[in-house]
View 1: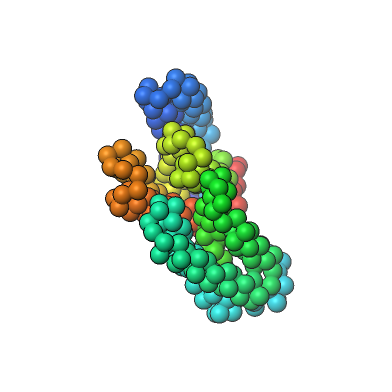
View 2: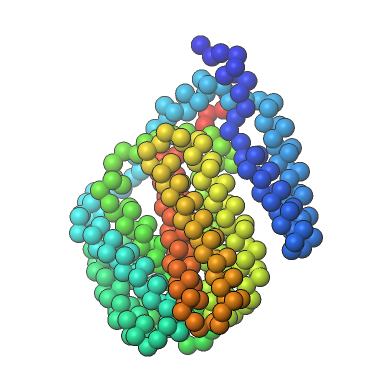
Length: 337
């Protein structure tokens, strides 16, 4: 039987996190621009209205229990494709490709930072190895994802680093490619075909929607970072938008931890994403300060820049992993009375 206290509990809400975002923008605009403060004021007002409205109608405990009983319908898939993905060699190749791509991103950051000719040679050699691994994975998978990876690596090889704009596109696609390889390693692992730990997505809007929005925000931030590194634009917009990306990641991570406090997959994945993103923010501000103190092509700048680029790639990849896990484990919204 539902107790009175359960009956009047407010439903899970984004209002507190949205309020934090609005207040942060409001204060950030004091030292940047009045436009940022105006946006923060609007967000704060909307969050206040949502927060007050959340106490009107609550989610009953019975509805929550009913939602937990919902199970995801099996998705239609051919036996051939399932067997192909379950092959151990496919996962091994995908994991090796992801590891090689991460090292390639580090080497590419070193080339951009003018670390020396040895970095350029190593970058070219490892790029060829990544191409071979991608071709192997595409032949093992024989599906659209594999062929898309192969097309992306061929495009990367054609772009090279011929001009600042092309170099920025090359760096951006490299991080996108790494995130795709991490996703490939995840969905070809032994754990992926196992039944998921289904939980209700009771947030409004859903965590599935928020996770995809967060991925989009991080992709924009990665593109801005690539443009700054290749001197296509200044760092002002990149630094300002970093606040938005960091807040979106924190909001998503905290909501996942609160709603899925005992989930064996989503909670640790959300924690890992926030730790990586926090490290990335710290390295970003560190790189900005170091560049103001020493010359551009000195060793401290090169080291912290390469670390910042590497952690940026890991931030995007971890956000994609959490999004895929949310999509897999939170298939339905809660049942409303």
